Image 1 (cartoon, rainbow, N blue to C red):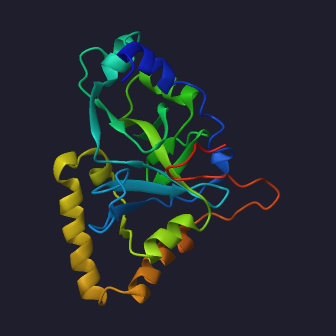
Image 2 (cartoon, rainbow, N blue to C red; image 1 turned 180 degrees about the horizontal axis):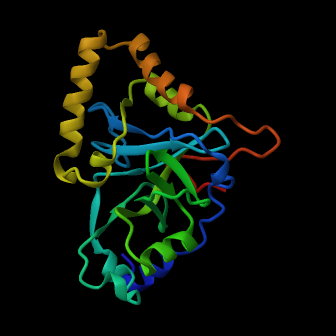
Length: 236
């Protein structure tokens, strides 16, 4: 791992263009992906991922239950407002691990962020992160090294083939749940819900895919789509 000050500089490196048109994504559409036990990909095994749509039809998100040993104060030693804080930097996903994604609460709508739910926002914009860290602290903030991304249709296919449970997202889970027990807790919830709804199978998984389809923002055909590849290469 890079030295903490260097990592802080890397985390603020230019990711502003990763999700262009963030302001165009207006409707909140965040969901939680809970990895099924059968998902053995080491990037996502036993993870809970907060996911939202962006304006080009793909999905972007961060892993909620993989904290690192690095604290925000260590990563950004030049920011006096972080001194004494014990917030950890989380491992957000396999894409662009040297750059930062972050989730925060704000009563005002930031142009540089995607609306997840209520007053919860997700952003990859380094300028916005710098302002949040340097100013009065927001009601809640978590910073992630890297993120996860899916091209249009890719995540639906993974759900259909049995990789993920889908649950409604909520602020308490995002900011307050214990990372070490989060996956098992939500897996029990998802399994219980699936059992009550119908036996597991393609039909039930199709309903979970519909959650993402119904809440997705329309794609602007005049703009190029993002070529997201979950664990292969960063978004461009």
